Length: 508
Ligand SMILES: Nc1ncnc2c1ncn2[C@@H]1O[C@H](COP(=O)(O)OP(=O)(O)OP(=O)(O)O)[C@@H](O)[C@H]1O
Image 1 (cartoon, helix red, strand yellow):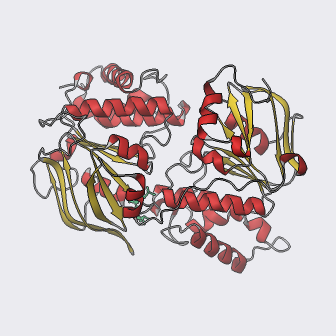
Image 2 (cartoon, helix red, strand yellow; image 1 turned 90 degrees about the vertical axis):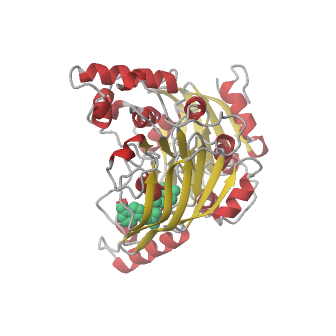
Image 3 (spheres, rainbow, N blue to C red; image 1 turned 60 degrees about the horizontal axis):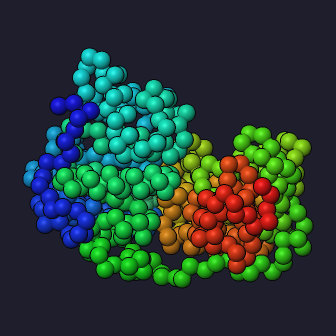
């Protein structure tokens, strides 16, 4: 059977929508599964059933073991002890046939950037594509699946992956995972971290359709509310074990956070700014900046101010950050030094062959040096401080690739704040970071601002903007609103992001 006309799932399952936990047989079962990497006990004895036709949400702090467990359940990695049963086949070893029907879409996409979309599909799904005219078959299959999953995706099968946006790469990754002749379990690892709201909605509509046909979907996400709205059941991981499994119906976000072991704190908005924007010395400025997608953008950043850039994705926020990072044009002025935190750690950010300590200190090194000579004691102290402050699991000596995704992201954030930069530019930096750590990072930003550092922060999560002193909302490369203090709310940002006519006195 070829992938362009695939049935999904092989088990009968109760219809979705009533959100009752599935009573269908498990497609995958883990019993007392352990996995150790060197001194790290990533899995400490996991028991879990994933049933046909259910959406099982899997949540847990950064480094809890979610991705490791998924790699074991997908037959990509062996466990040290315990058993994995797939579609009734007991104790299956990695690579064995039953695992073919278990597919995983990764948080960091598994796509090869130098190949086209169709070539990537061929590499991943060649066992169910014809050998002759494979390129055509792969192109047709992926185009069809993308249309089905993400209408309006804008991806052509002949596009090279490296030319795609982060969101498009994520869409191709998910489509790639689903293209197989029989799909019993689809594992989605943080699928919506890089997708916009429309694509996320389309994905979950697709998830509903395939689960109605019997495929199980395992959804890993730090977005607890999203998990609760999509999943039938929620499993909670903590320190390498599944500590709770509950039906999603009736569970609230706070219940899940409590099960995760996170301290439940009320989200706190930014404290009212001690000084109004006009009273602060301006440290960075764009004056009627135009070109490269921007139109007459004027923004100012005061010393010790946290300035948000909001709006729908791709409306010019990254271009603003880019100008502040490289202020080469006459319309941009920046005083002092800068540090940049990329949101796409795969493309820029992580130095994979270096340790956590080296990744963390690389920017701060020069500031810590005395007369140009590196001071290893000061560097070590700084590394220790930041590893503790952000609870980077894995420790300073771990290789960067040994860290979980969220912990890698923490290192990149720490790198910027460990430097002496006067202006920190944040490009949607908290994707994949767990709720608890995010709360710590928000506090960190406010503390650093109180100490005189300025921050310009683009976030695709409007709720995060509540931690800013001022927010510029961008649409189609223009600033369409400037919100201050109590005006900053998710509803307000959404309203001005969409409304053609609304303006709060900002430039048009
Ligand atoms: N290849 C590896 N080598 C060494 N340690 C590893 C490796 N992969 C994972 N680990 C460690 O195992 C633990 C669990 O990591 P895992 O990626 O499964 O966590 P996670 O729950 O998926 O985290 P996140 O939410 O940040 O993605 C972490 O402490 C991590 O550092």
